[in-house]
Image (cartoon, rainbow, N blue to C red):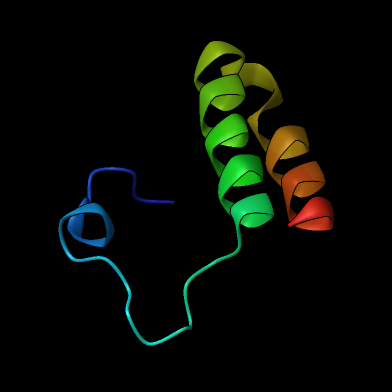
Length: 52
């Protein structure tokens, strides 16, 4: 995942195809946890995919 691309923040989605709040929370939590525990990054993202 490329967290360096902030176009989604600058240009919000108006088409109705935006991720839900749950998906956003899961993704943000995975980003934070993966940055804190890089050795468990694969497990964190796999679990985030299950929830999102």
